[in-house]
Image (tube, rainbow, N blue to C red):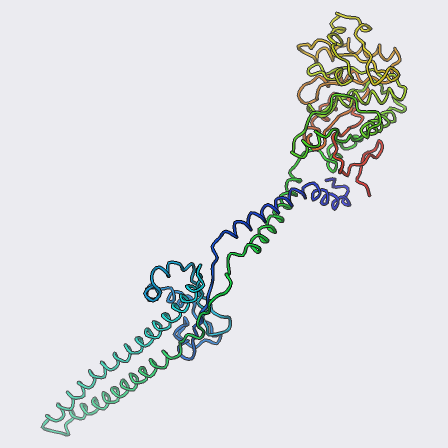
Length: 533
């Protein structure tokens, strides 16, 4: 995205959504259907709840400190352990039976907010088992909890009574000692009487405390109860196909949009919104649309077919695009001597040969004398594109001295009135760059100029794979670089421009090929491009 044009940000966002929207929506729909189908096939699970209430002093036993808390929160860590303990579970299994208990899916324990109520939830594929199991857990837990509370106080009371009996024996022993002393008023008897009084007081205190513990045992056991029995669930709480599918679809939508923008940020292919960032001050001479149904179809599959090896119809939309490029080329040459034009690309398959042939046809259509040179001495296709076939001599034949220039030139084009003079490639040499960089090739181009050629268009091999265009660059007035929308990489184009500039080649413009019909790329003369307002 062009950082100098912040107003294009929203258009970039909308462009990403438009390009990737159908794919994202397709993924969302597929995930929705898949999750809905999978969720629908899961077993139905029913959940039933039973409530256990803690009141009064019992609550003190359920807190960490042992004191009555001000926030009335139950220590659920202890209670969850007790509800699901082996003792309670064994009692539930004995009540329900092992087969029925085997259908229990999940047991949950939560505290109802701001209350002394603990809710026991049991899930099962059978609503009856869910209900019966919830009641069984609540009832057995309550009974075992009551029993445990009673045992705590009963054991404490029993310990106090045992101590009281020991004290009673000591009292009896002191009384016997007092009775057997011959001097009832002796100092030893006075001490014994004081000890007996203290033990009697201690015994009374122990008996009172044991009695209080007996009362507490009954009281605290009565403060834990089943507040609400479990009901029979009518509807399953899972699965929920519509909700599950909706959540999955929403997550897919968010992830899909995120991945689309991430892909666009990481994608270095040339597009309308990043071309200027690579070319800099080099103008865009024009854009060419995707040509052919097959090419568009392959584009939908993420592939690219080869550009058509023929001249486009004179009345087609593509021909109008070529006319716009021809106009840009002619205006770029105003006041300058730019007859020799090298047409190349960064990598192969970007449409340089098609541009050379069709641009020549459009210039000839305007009455200009055009000569095209098949300078791609590695994979020549220009003659075939112009409709010239069965040519076995040409450029290399002349440079090597095997043929005269006038004998290898052929006429091509749509009609005799719009004829183009073609210099075919001839036999392919072992080292094309040597021939193309030779003085003989430069003298040949000079002869064409003296013969009155208005434009000499040279189709040459790509810049990055070979050095042929760099050799030709010393003989031409300007270079046109062809890039393919959505295929050429920014780094490849930048490297091609750098290589040409290192040999002092004048890159007069860039042509972007295979632009989709829905692209925001709009031709803006010889100065660049922008999205429509």
